[in-house]
Image (cartoon, rainbow, N blue to C red; front, side, top):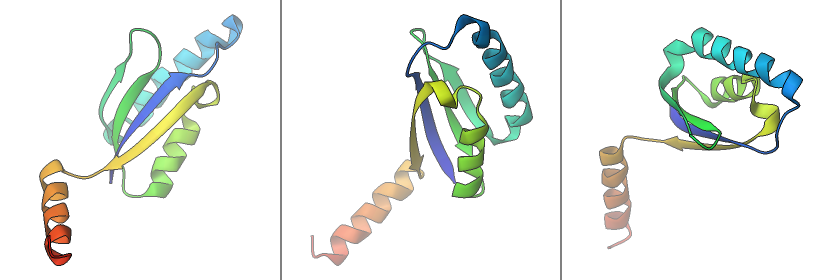
Length: 98
């Protein structure tokens, strides 16, 4: 399954903790590189990743392990291929008589 995960700062962490959190984030990226399709940082703070994982339990574990989770508002949007989504929508509409 693939999911878009967006994290935005909820509050500023104490300065003495930020270095460790950022290093932890870099270590996390290295450990989970095989699950990361793409990741990016927002200029004003926060960032995103598209993760490709086998199941929701793995997705949850990765999010909980992310060092910045405690100081972030995290949004998770599982998604499917766009064309497959449109085809599924069309089939559902046709079944409803649309």
